[in-house]
Structure formats: structure tokens, C-alpha cells
Length: 288
Image (tube, rainbow, N blue to C red; front, side, top):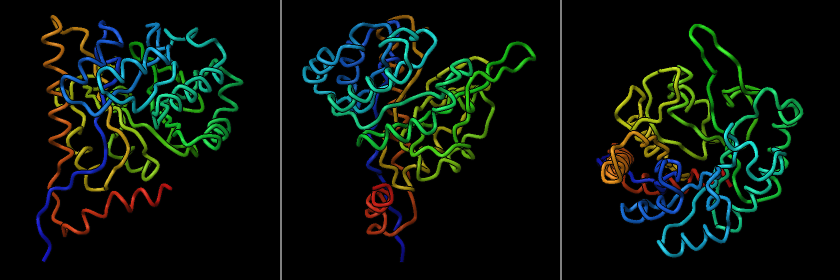
């Protein structure tokens, strides 16, 4: 007879260094270590420390917080970080990940005005993925909206599931902004889901990155599905705490986000204990 058991996947829970803004990258390592996160995802942006491999290694060693992922500088505000050539940015992100022991590089689809980059993007990501053990996980974005107008800002599309990528990142705040179906997108990603950006949203035209549980996205259900499927990637809290009155409140928000994630990853499933124990290994075998 099947037993009720707690299924805890191999997924590690990390903190995006962007989640502590307006505090800096160094503060993110300190907070992640103090709260008990499994590691960090480094958002490479205008903070010089986020671009400095040796500085990041020293922070990781000092706080005993592993660097699990590197987010390539794909934002409008990072257009000149690590140069202006988008492929050079990805090469530097891959090199950083390899040197820092991170398993994943998160990358956005190109902006539509990056025409040559966009034309070559799908094949180029495959080429780069073939040259390393680091996963290039392409992230879902969203259409830009102004009043009643919608602008397609990304190419080939803001929804990467229509293309043949090896790995995906699902971002629930972006799902909310795009007004898409999060669980439907999760199903389309299937075994190619390699990385999760966990945050909430209300469906606003603004990319909100709310603390999980404070919006309308199925954050808890998504985490429970990951647990039942033996997800072995990383779940990264990429949330917006810039409105926190101060450091104490910011840390409380990040502690709440971590507790929410761990609670819902430890989902009860009516399966035999031996079968549940084998689930992560089976999923890993399919991806190897």
C-alpha cells in the first residue's frame, strides 16, 4: 500500500543579488548567509562587484555562500556592462559561471532592435551550450504595455517555449505581467525547465516581483509540482524589496520568501517512499 511521504527534491533555494536593491551585491551574500539560503544568483549589472570574478569569489568564500547561477547583463540599464556585443556578454557570463562553480547562466531573449543577434539567437545559444557544462536557461519575458497598446519588444518572442532551447528559466513575475498561464507555461517547458525565478505578480503592466504569496500567481502550486516531479534545478528568489522601509524590514521580507519556498517545496505526495526517493535521480538521468 502506498504511503504518504514528504517529497523533498534536490532543488536548491537561492537569493538573487537583485533582491536586496538598493543595497549592493556584497550585502546580498551577507543576507543570504544569515538567513540560510543555499546560495546566490549573481545579477551582473552596474555594481562593479557584480562584474568582478575575484571579488565575487572572495564574498562567496567569506560568507560560505555558493554562487549557483549568473544572470547575464541583458537589461536596458546594463547595455554597456561587459561591452556592447551581446555574444561577448554571454561568453563572459559563461566564463564567470565556470570560474565560480555556477551551473546556470540566465539569459533573456534579444530585444527586437538587436536584429542580427535575434536572427542568430536560437542557433547561437545551442552552439554556446555545446561548448560547456553550464546551462544556458532562456527566460520568459513579457510584452510591453502602455495604456491600451502592446509592444512586442523581444525576438523571436517574449515566450521562449515556441523555440527549441535546451533549457528554460520560468519567471512568475514575468508570467503575471504577460497575463499568461503559469502552469501552462510550466507544462510546455517540461523536462527542459532548468531554473526558476520565484516571485509573485498581480497582472499589472508593471513587472512587480512581489514576495511569493502576495500576488495572484500559483507560486505554491508550482513549487508543489516541482517537488512531485523531482526538480533538480535551482529556485531563485528574485523579488523587489526596494520599498522596504529599511534593512530590518527587507531582511524580514526575504526570510518570509525563503520560508514560503521551503514549505511548498516539501509537498506531501501519496507515493511509495522508495519511488519518491528515486524521482530526482530519474529526472537527472533524462537530462544527462
